[in-house]
Length: 353
Image 1 (cartoon, rainbow, N blue to C red):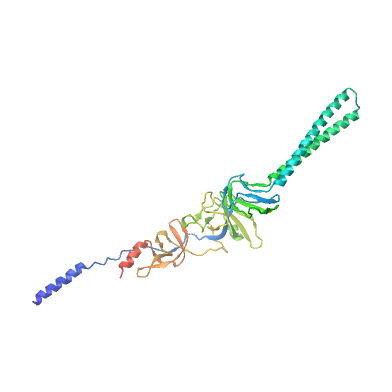
Image 2 (tube, rainbow, N blue to C red; image 1 turned 90 degrees about the horizontal axis):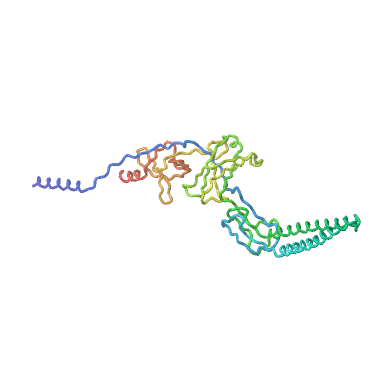
């Protein structure tokens, strides 16, 4: 009887063992060792500027009676932006045109009189002095017509200054006046810039400027854009030949490629120079594969292997991306091993007791 019970208990244990799920063996994790970045870079804060930006100011006085420009509008060359009350100027131009017509009528009379005096002089009916007086009156009337014509042209030009037009195709950046405001000579009315020609301007120490190689192009970072569009290679670089006496810095200008969406003057930017120099914001950094980064909601981290090879999720702060590598600014120490497959590391944690 006891023998039958023993066989039954053994069978029960065997069946329970078969029914229980087998724990998966931990998989082997691929890992890399955190190494210093291949090349340190110097970052210098800068700002995006428009190569062509124009502040259009009033040249005449008067009330703003028409305002077609709005901030952000794309305008064409010659497009009317606003208009200043030009009624007084139009009346002055009309008066000048009337004076020109009167002067031309006087010139016609003086011309015919001079021709008659010439005919009479040929027949010896008048003296040379009378002919010279007629010629003098003719020339004086002709000069008066020219003066009146120039004055009328100036009046028409003055009247044209009441219409403000775009000097080139661009975008309206600022309109500091409203309809009905009083425009005075020198008062800014509209600011226009050309979005196809932008640049980054940064101040760098003169020691860094002295070490820059000819033709060396920096890398431009635009933190205000999406992550995949933040890094741009400038089309051209210009180092100004003057040094600021107060800060001992030199202005570095980097022209941005045309057609960058979302880039506007005033944006914060950085210029990264491949050479490290004293006085720059160079900091030692580590580089890991981009595939090792884990993003969960607001957490950015990676799996670091402990001495026993177990993956531990750790929060890190990322820097710039260079190809398939990403810079780690904080949260990781040199020599630590990082799992290159976050999903495998997560499964490893679940299967490891």
